[in-house]
Length: 538
Ligand code: GDP
Ligand code: ZN
Image (cartoon, rainbow, N blue to C red; front, side, top):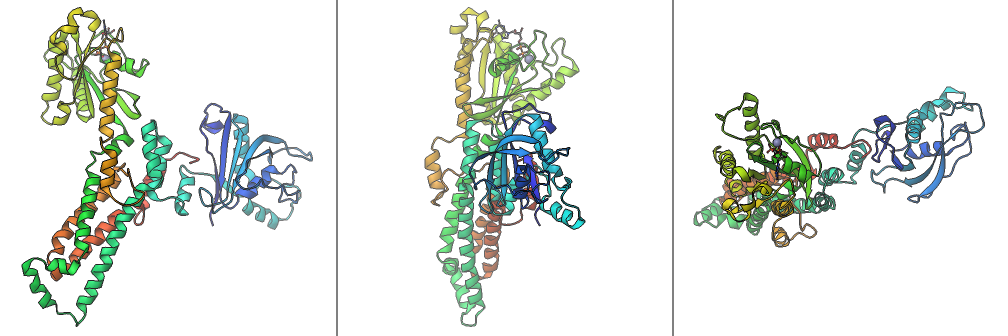
């Protein structure tokens, strides 16, 4: 027997969380007692509905209705309960609801007093003393009808999943949608939510299961006396024996594997967009790294100071660059360790700057125009000094020559001869917009491919799966494992009857890897991790 849950589903916090008030607060209930609880709240009689009070009518399903909610916890002897709020009420009878259960939504006024009142009424509904009920049996029956508890984080979505309303990939998409910071993150999550990614994987899985069915038929047939395996095995010597067993299956599996590999070879764009890019700002102390970060962030997020070595730890700011979520990292200045005044703390800061740059998707090297040579050297030393710095990133560094306001001849001297370099001034904002637009283009290029349409068309001819991109490492792992299994199948399927079972096993393995993505098998662990990410009321 499913319990009935309730939660404040809108933002703003409400009373128990201590957040500020919002104009409207949505309180949601789901489960078998939801409609009873609503009737109770609509009942002005202190006897409630279960005490024989007049039965309040529920609004029509899925139609908003403005009603007065009464407080069942009213503590007086009057004939009527105190009003709690005037609220818009919506009912969604199961199974055609988000969770598949009866759902009630109360759109209340967002004040703490109202939200608190409604939440506490729902919590205590089953223990409200009803004057008209004296015998224990009726009391118990009433408790059963009106038993609600606060929802756990993600529990509404969990129920939607449990009742087959959402697939696992869609739940993941919903979780992404709820936390999306930027427009592109939202678009990607919505694309995944509409099911195109699961359609792609389910389509592939069906193909594999068809292949398996064929294999099983051949295996059964092979066990049959009617077939002489020895004779067929000889045929393998000329190399086409495998073909004769697997027939049309082999080429289809090959093209399936190729489709998976194209799907995988996406430079992790979907995952980058989902998780966001990291942009590290590096350079000598005092070059203006923190000033640049503050300028881009539009607020004083980093500590700017003229004492070298102030930024010792890494400061982060989240930016929305053209719809891409970017974490901008201000790092400690880097300079020669033997330089005067460098202490242990600064050395540690430089170590962290190096790590930040190494982990970043884009590196911005800031160079003081009045100290150009040393500045450039410091950035290049940071990048090249460490053997395991990615080569592609070395070519992708954006050089910012700062403080051009201090050096008039800057514009035509060789400071800006380096490709990817931009003269700016954090003081006058000169050149900052140009730099920002290049940074945005760079960020966009990392998360989108030039020929998105073309590549997704080539990806699969499966209907309704255009633009399906991998958004999670979990999906990637399973697709990789599936493609590997198919690679082994291709080898084994060329070996005729000897390897028939083994080849079939690889198909089974590939199908089950794809099944794990969509939740067809083995989902418990994934669910635990996933629903823990949701907040209460979702
Ligand atoms: P960081 O050590 O690289 O983070 O450098 P800061 O951002 O702390 O800046 C060091 C000093 O340079 C501060 O006094 C800033 O006010 C100054 N500064 C930063 N950008 C400019 C600029 O474009 N022009 C001028 N004249 N001074 C700047
Ligand atoms: Zn700084």
